[in-house]
Each structure stands twice: as structure tokens, then as C-alpha cells.
Length: 436
Image (cartoon, rainbow, N blue to C red; front, side, top):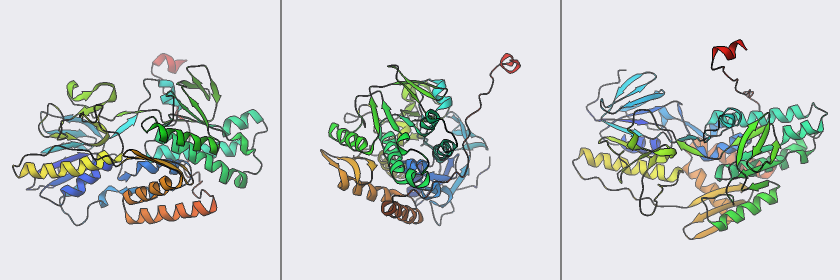
């Protein structure tokens, strides 16, 4: 595929997430041709996907067009494409729109949902890593509520209204709290003919506490807030199966539900073409050195969730959240500038600004250094931080107005079934299956 010629070195960035966006913005201020490739034409603010899934926000308020992230430059290019393979020996990548050569390649592809090899769960559960997936959750929840209004079978109503979430990390905790608030603020008004108590929210995890990456103090606070909201928490419960609308755990517990959400793990979304020694086993991440350079390469780098940089402070790599991606993107931009100036690169050092998770109205937890905040102070800090890091002034204004409206009206204005959800259809793998 032909790209406009440039006298500047070409930096190809795969992925328009936090790392890719921050790197693009920094590099286009200098003498580089920046080519950003993504399968979507927008950047997604993933920390707020759960609010789209629970009818709190519309998707366009947390998405920003990738063609607009850099202003007034003629050496920034965006291409909508799927990356099929990295050709290390040829300094090129194979994409759905052709081959693209590079001088420097940056892999910022993030993660994908990890089902740990369980095909039934992969086929039947709902993940939440993208805007379309969050819309699927919203649509299915609302469709199930509509179905519940037209059946006289009490057991069927309970199954349709029950929501089960596997994985009590930040995503699972925030989803659970948001669904509990949806129940409190919407069900009685929109569905007066339904028993609101039938809408049960179950949160399951194989660990012995919610928010395992957080401090024990934060975990205990989050669990207390969730239980107060009515969320039923099941710890030390590992989900092993989901079939015929029944969630089954290793201990034998069974929960019938029409909405099963899988937020129990992620794995690196690594393109094909890397050497086996470059990929970190089951995590699927790319081994990088202190400069974010992929091992066994000279001009290929990885940043964000896909990068595994082992240090004394972070022996298992940096946390797979937005801040490391943003900081690595900014730092790598400086190092690439130093490279073309024949200067030595500087090693990356992560500044941990803390971890936050919101549970509901006026309820959140935050680990900041050695301190743990809870309740309203943590919730207010969570609001401010997320508004600040949203891409685009319009998005900040829209989200702020939505939050203000929801706070005072106990409402979820985006409860619309725009695109009805339909379950995946099993594709036969053999001729004999088709004949049967």
C-alpha cells in the first residue's frame, strides 16, 4: 500500500488506545511521519465503558475520532485496518489494506478478553472491552427486562432480570455498582409491573476478596459499599461453565441468568510474527527492555498493556491500566527524538499515581501511595481524574452534564435499545455436523 512520501522517518503505531494516542501527539510535534493504524476510527476511553453498558452514557461521549487527535500537521496519517502480521525481517507489517513499511514500529495493541481456554464461556458470555460489546450488554439487559414484562412465569422473570458478573476486579465492581443503582433508580419507574427485588446482581470471583490488585483496606471498603447497594458477592467461586443460561461454579453453585458478563481476565493482544522469546507465555505480552524496545529487535517497541517490562519494583510488569500506557507513550516519544539526534535513550521509570474504582453514588475507593481513600472524597477524586483524562473538550462537557443530570434525577437517560442484541450462532465445523 502506498503512503505519501516523506523526508522524515516513518513511525508506524498499531493501536489507538491511551499509549498510541499519547505517542502520536508527542511525535507529530517533531520530524517524524506518524502512521496510526487501528481497526476502529476512534479512541475509546475504556474506564467509562461500564457506564455505556449500564445506560449512564452514550458511546459517542467516551469516543474520539483518531483522525482528529492531531491538529495542523501534514505528516500524521490514520489508516483504518486490521494488522495481520509483523514482518520483522522486512521492516513491514501486513494489514487488511496491504503492506506498510516502517522505520520504527510501535505495538500498542492493548489486551483482549481471556477466557482461559473455556470455549463455552467464550461463546455464550458477554465481554466488555469495546464500545460495541458494551452496547451489547446494555441492549441485552433492556431486552430481558422487556421480555420479563410479558411473561407470567415467575421463575422466568427472575432469570431474565438476574445479572451475573464473573470477575471482581475494577470492571466487575464498577459494573455491579452501576447495575445496582440502575435497579434503584429506574426499575420502579419504568417497570412498575415488575418486582424490583427480582433484579439480583451477583458478583463472583475465584479470589478471596474483591479488587485483588488494590490494598486490603480498599477491598474491604468496596465490598461493604457493594453489599449496602444490594449486590450479592460470591468469593472463592470460580466459574467453570455457562450453558443453557445457567452459570456453574467449581463448587457446584448454579445461577440461572439471561445476562452473564465475563470480566475475569485479559491477555495480550499480540500480532502474529514475533519470535517465541519475545512473547511472555500465557500473558501474551511482549517482553521489552527499560526503553520499551521489544527483545530481539532494534527498531520495534511496545507500550501499554501489551508491554511486559520487568523491574525490581514491578517484577510482573506494570499494571495494565491507563497511566503506564500514557507515561510510556510520552517517554518513548522523547527517546525516539533522542535516537534520531544520535543521543542515548533514557530508561523508563513509572510514577504510580494510584488506583481508583467507583462503586456508586458518593462511593469509591482509591489507593494513593500508602493512603486509602473511601466514600465521597474518593468518589469526587475519581470524577475529577476521569474528566481530566477524557479526550476532547466536547466529551468532557457531555459527560459532566450527564453525570450531573443522573446525580440529581437518579436516572439513566441512555436506556435505549438502539441495536438489538442477538446471540452468536454456532458455525458447524465439519460436513457431518451440517448434515446432522
